[in-house]
Image (cartoon, rainbow, N blue to C red; front, top):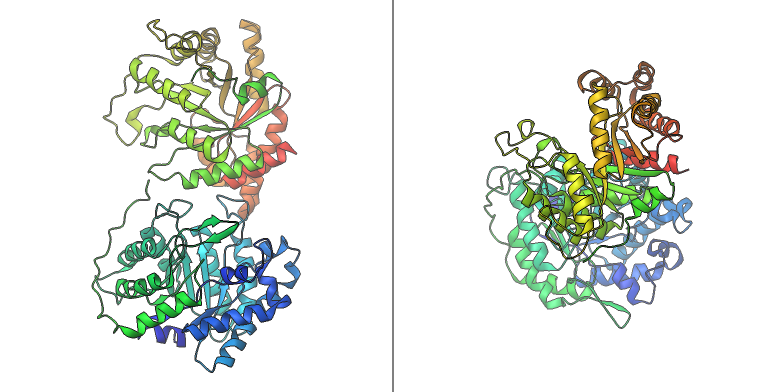
Length: 627
């Protein structure tokens, strides 16, 4: 692509402007106002800020359209003025440039939509892309020189924004260059847990002309992130094969002082870092939240006073995998089941690395949809993952939804079993689901120790008759009783009915409080099992949460039906999935909702198992069941 903006980047480090919101707030405009609407209601204030940045030495100004998309404007009742607001944003910036008699570029600003994108939100990719395209089209038609997609936290979302910009460009005579910039948390990761290297590679592969980082913390953090991003996208050990780089830091981490938001980094400090950014490979530098024309003027002086560095040599980073007191009142789950409420429990797997960001995003979505409890599996399929009880604590603390800890007996001796239970209780975990656990032979470490001292019924007895009574397995006091609410596994379609009845009776005798079942696809299977059990052993009289595994595609349905033992899917359901084509996932939601309505007469809840991290689909199921 031949373009003035890209041509300039090939020969110099371009200086962009600083914060718009900070400057508007400094003029007495509250953060509860729609800053983008000021393009129409107070254009002089916006134009003055552009003028001040141009006079400070900025070679690129960004339009006041950061939140001018349909989702955010709708919150202010302004969605019908989207085109007017974006067009006015470009025109105001263009007017300030013309009045300055300087050669300054105008970048159309595009921020996050303000909604979560699937699979961690309800907005599907095509709808997100359409929303971005709507705004980008307005900016391009108004005469922007380039598009800046900034302050993004979700790689799914920013990829849709880049695609939208490319789609808009394909419809025009001169496609606009695209800048893609992400913001990071204090731990140098995005909110969803992605590190700078992954972000850089993703943005480059998505086709952005310029990639980078903005907002986040101060210059020191962004210099560190910039270096990591540059190293990640260098293909031959030099700077020739990488995309152009963009960096716009905040003026440090903000703090509230006397009712005002204050930033610690002063203008002189920014001037020093302007040179460091250039030396690290930045092609565009500027400022974000907390920066002012004084910061930009300082950067201008620094860049003008020092000669540009020679092309640097950078060693590329290797591609890596995604990083990874006494008894309390009864759990909320116990209280809800005791009150006869129909409970919705949803399973989530722990992360395979250190990051819990995506899990937290999924749990938040499910909690908002109405899930009563999140079940955290422990090393499913015998694969190495973060300890489930640690994940439970993080979810309960950060999301505010109660969890159930899966507690396998396999791979734990008596010492570890009891130590882990005490740790879980100390962290506020009250619900445990006792299972045997998957054999290590099928997982990442097939030769790992696979022994166990207790079978599930034995562990249930240890918890209910030991820990909950205040003693350990040897009868020694643990100081005070625990208050665990214990669930156990139940197979409603067993290959050996007699054995399943025997195991079920043992678990009931040991003290199991409730049961979670394997997934079923016919309500009559579960009702029939319980009727037969009652004939032989009497009524179960324990809450049963029926396993629901929503289908995602016809291929998924056929795989489960033909290759997973114990799962039998009705021909009618498979036929509906096959007939649905691209809408199969929606049909899967409908089938799940229909099945849940059918089990309600005899079940006390459902245990939903999301497939392929499609938390958005499960959230829809929950909302429809909750009504």
